[in-house]
Amino acid sequence: NNMHFDTTRANVEAQGAEARNLPAPELFDLESDHPFKGNMDVDKLRQTVEYVGAGHIPAIFVTITNNSGGGQPVSMANIRESSVVAREHHIPIFFDACRFAENAWFIKLREEGYADKSIQEIVTEMFSYVDGATMSAKKDGMVNIGGFLAVRDPELFERVAQKLILVEGFPSYGGLAGRDLEAMAIGLREVLDENYLSYRYHHTKFLADALQERGVPIMTPTGAHAVYVDAKRALPNIPREEFPGQAFTVEMYLRGGVRVVEIGSLMFAAPDPGTGEMKFPEMELVRLALPRRVYTISQLEFVADTAGEILEHADDLGGYRIVSAPKVLRHFTAQLEPCIGSCDS
Image (cartoon, rainbow, N blue to C red; front, side, top):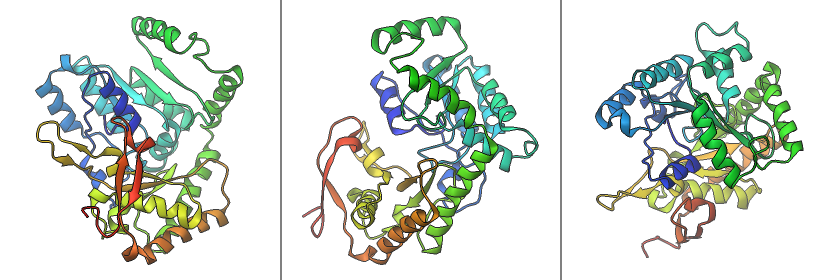
């Protein structure tokens, strides 16, 4: 995967597989203006396939846009190149397609040769390179529940359909109410509207600009569904063992009633299976995701003001320690407490 999201990784590992991230190196330069930081590192993909062996790789996924990587888009060229590697080695390639339309918008906006193509045309080409897709429709399906799995292979479809009947519901509804299916059908069409996508992008960019005006360090360029604060730079006095991203998240709620989410050490840090040493993710981010068609400009300014206030008091803030946590997806239900002085004490 160019980068697994937390729930995707957990489901992969629950099946006894290893979830490997192969993001392009540009992703980790948070301040660069590279237009497609969400790309797969295709060279590393080739090396991994050759080293591990195609027979040990059940699938390659491309997450569009790259949610764990700052909501950054993936270029059409990168999708095509990743598909070539998969085809050469007869490995199925899938999209994690939660934000496929937003990804298509960035291809139209930033990639040579696509400015005059419609979003529908771009989406059609994107999906022509893959064998299937998973999707949470709460994103670019524009609904409050549901999702789908799409596959080209009829034999795989039959296997999946039988499992679906066992655990979810009949393939025609998959456990969803009819109204939710109807809403999803509308949403999947409506999300292709260029006027909507332009609004979505510029709404998010307004928040990004407002945060930067207040000195809040963010990942650039901005994606379409969220702005990502660089918690390592925002709260440099808090060590990663004490979850600076979570500290920022808590302060946003305490000071402004603003709910944001940590995408950093609480979500992704884990002990090395060989040495037991704690391995931290490359980035320590806080995601400020924007619900569609909800917030006014004045509300976004309030969000930016709250974040700016946190920076003004950064030296006074401390970290957190985990009191209790489950073994899987700990960040969903973990209980933490503030460190008094130091978490070592």
